[in-house]
Length: 181
Image 1: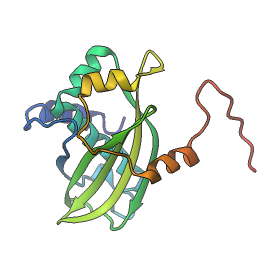
Image 2: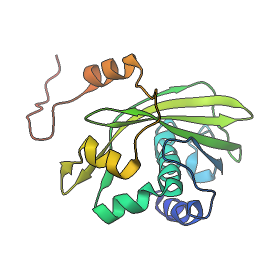
Image 3: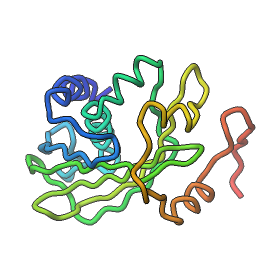
Image 4: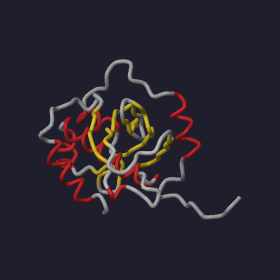
């Protein structure tokens, strides 16, 4: 909710930025706002993922995929995320969110996103997303029909498969009882 107005503004402004292929990298220039920081006056660790949503929306809108997804009733959901921090983004600092798809498999589309300031990576995240329609996952075949075929040689790094396997929770239709072990 805290980024709702910013997201709506981004959906409007991204449609006026130069178009991209969904397989290209997008670069979204931003500035750290007071609503992005915590008591230490730097971007809160949880806020990075929220801001990165904006980068993924920018890529989707500029590539035309967002309109196709909406027309088909598809919604993106995060299935897994990991992030590493290097430096803190400070209040009013200018930075860009660099976003690209690094591959997909039968369960997810994988993004790499970076927060970059002055040519330096401040944080890097990998996000596994799923597209769902009426509570069911959209198949890879349907996704490729809308996105187009990925570039030749686009292959997920091996560690992504291991990360997803080691990090995954049971599917929503299977039990996942809470018990510390």
